[in-house]
Amino acid sequence: MSTGELAPFLGVLVLTALVTALLVWGLRSTPIVDDGSDAPERKTQRVPVPLVGGLALFIALVMTAVQEIDADVLWLGGAHRVSVWSAYALLGSVLVGLTDDVAKSGLRPGVKFAAQLVLALLCARHAVEARGSDALVDGGTTFALVLLAMNAFNTFDNADGCATSLAALGLGAVAPMLAAPLLGFLPFNLWLRRKAPDGSTTPLAYLGDAGSHLLGVLVALVPGAWPVLALPLLDLARLSVVRWRRGSRPWIGDRRHLAHRLQAAGLRPTTVVLALLAVAAPSVLGGAFADRAAWVLPAGLGATLLLFLGALRVTPDVP
Image (cartoon, rainbow, N blue to C red):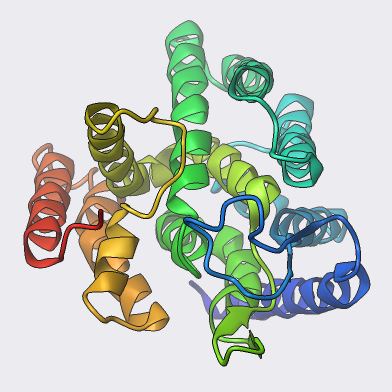
C-alpha cells in the first residue's frame, strides 16, 4: 500500500468503527440481536449480541464510495468499477441475511437458497458486462463462486472474528481498501467484549447472516481474492460428510468446525483466529503471486490443504 493510500485506508477503518459503535448502541434492544436461545447446543453467548456487522460494513462501503475515495480499488480490487448489478447484489446480500437474522428460527433452507440464486445471477450479470470475450465463462464462474462464497462464509462465521479476519486476509492481498472496513469492524467481533452474569465474555457485535453474505458476495466479486475460499470450503466439505454420516444435514449447524476444535484444544479467541489465518495464508499468497509462475497457486492451495489436515490431526474431535 502506497503512502497516498494510507490516509483513506485509515479513514475507512475509523469510519467503520464509528458506524459499528453507533449501531451497537442503537440496536442492542431491537429484534436484530442474537441471544443464543434458538440454538443453545451450539451458541455460547450468555447475553444478547447485536447482529450489526452486515449493516456496518455496507454503510461504510457506501459512504466511502460516495466520497469517491478511489472507488475502483475500494469496490472491486482495481479490476472494474462497480456496476449497478454488483451494487444490487451487495445490497441484496445484506437484505437477505438481515431477513434471516430477524426471522424466528431463520429462513427455511430452500427460501434462503432461492434468494442466494438471485444474488448469484446479479453478480454473473455484472461479470458478463465487465469482461470481454470470455464473458459467458466468467459469468458462469462468478455465479458458482458467489453461491460457494456466501455459504462458505456463512458457515465459517462460527467463532469470534474468524470470518471477518479471513475475508480481510483475502481481500487485503489484492485490494487493501476493501480490507479497511473489515478491520474497522473486527475489534467489536473479537476483542471488545461484554461480561455476562456467569463471568463469560461475549463480543459487542456479530456479523450475522447479513455480514457473512455480504463478505461472500464481496470476495466473489474480486477474482484475486478467490483463493481465500480454500479453507472455509475445505471445512464445509468435511463437515458436510461428517454431518451426513451422523444422521444430520449439511446445512444444520453444530460445533464441529475447525475453529471449534481449536477452541477445544484450549486456544483463546485471538489464537484461534491466528491459527486459521496461518492455514489460509499459503493459498492467499499463492493467488497474490500466481502471475509469477504457473505452479505458485497450486502449491499454495496444496500447502493450505496439508495445514488443514495437520490441524485436524492435532486437535480433538468434537462430538
